[in-house]
View 1 (cartoon, one colour):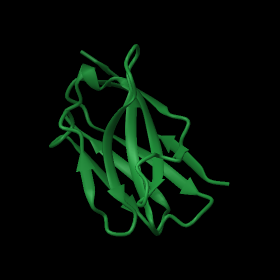
View 2 (view 1 turned 90 degrees about the vertical axis):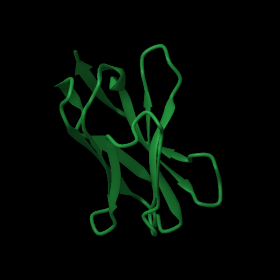
View 3 (view 1 turned 90 degrees about the horizontal axis):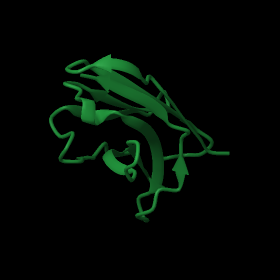
View 4 (view 1 turned 30 degrees about the horizontal axis):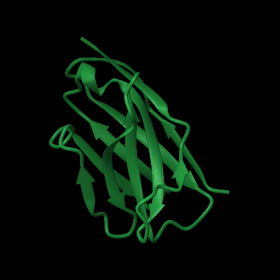
Length: 119
């Protein structure tokens, strides 16, 4: 059974940094893309960043480019997003997700972790 478990959320202040972790298990992710998404209250879920499990190729939403860095540790079966210069508009529930490189839909999702950025 595939499991994605996020950790590292919390309450921070504007300008702070935070790192989210996603522990992945249950299958081989060699042909997968790992992504981070977020959903703010009253808004739709939005893409934040993604990374290919094997090649480490990354993509970012314009809103986080230059502030967030996604990475993965294949030995630890984990995906991370390092967030810096956090803003109140980054407040959201952050989700880890996974999809096959051959599809566009994410198949697996974590339960989410809350980040609140106070002004």
